[in-house]
Image (cartoon, rainbow, N blue to C red; front, top):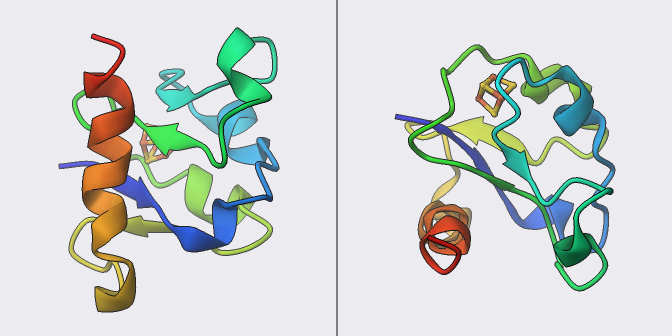
Amino acid sequence: MAYIICEPCIGTKDTACVDVCPVDCIHPRKDEAAFAAAEMLYIHPDECIDCGACVPACPVDAIFTLDETPRKWESFIDKNTEYYRSRA
Ligand code: SF4
């Protein structure tokens, strides 16, 4: 299980979540080459430890637990996974 970043992050990429994540599983970070081109940030589905710290840090309420991901944003569950699959 992992937390999911959804549509409000597109074009926002605030990165407050990156700063509070204890296991550095949210990418791309500002210091990564992929940051400029990425439309949003993504949570690694296997590395996330479900601590929940990123949820209140997000200024646009983009982050949800897997179970609470709104149906209209279900596609973001795969989007988060896909970001890391393409980089494996
Ligand atoms: Fe990182 Fe915790 Fe958010 Fe998972 S729930 S992405 S471990 S801050």
